[in-house]
Length: 187
Image 1 (cartoon, rainbow, N blue to C red):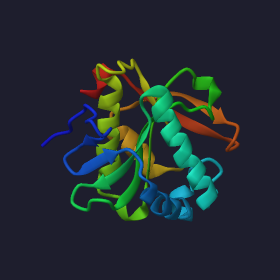
Image 2 (cartoon, rainbow, N blue to C red; image 1 turned 90 degrees about the vertical axis):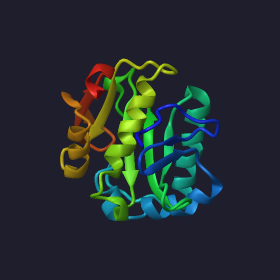
Image 3 (cartoon, rainbow, N blue to C red; image 1 turned 120 degrees about the horizontal axis):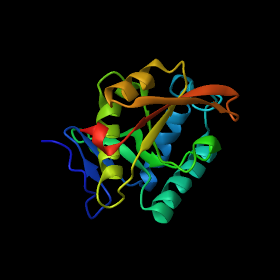
Image 4 (cartoon, rainbow, N blue to C red; image 1 turned 180 degrees about the vertical axis):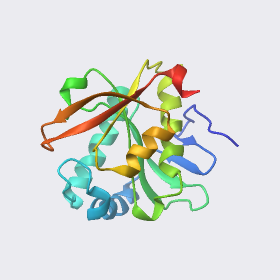
């Protein structure tokens, strides 16, 4: 079973192993735990962990982006373990890096227990197909990655994203790697 790249009536996408779905109130606590893991957050912005209040703010922003743009970041869970939040993946507008705007970024953040199994790549591939699909028809999607984040650099490589000019992320006070992909390069 491959990915179904159309969002179903509940706003979800399915891949071979994953369910990418809209957020539920029950996701707040597990997402807060993921955001409180220093190793997970090591390469996000300045590398600071997020507490429950900031996680709740993040969830509010995720849902607002869905409402305002018709795309956003999905909650990710394995189909074999329904209801167990692994993290998130999807599309967003990287307002933190104005030099690349206007654009859309594919992003992912998974709990450590989900690392090393190709889940981020699988989820991101479905998100890219959704963005390039007929509903949105995006012409290019970027990934913005901290240069030290070897795992995310590998995900971008597995997605066959190609380098774009590096940029300076003022909020993190560092240069970041920028990768891009077009619909033709996805297949």
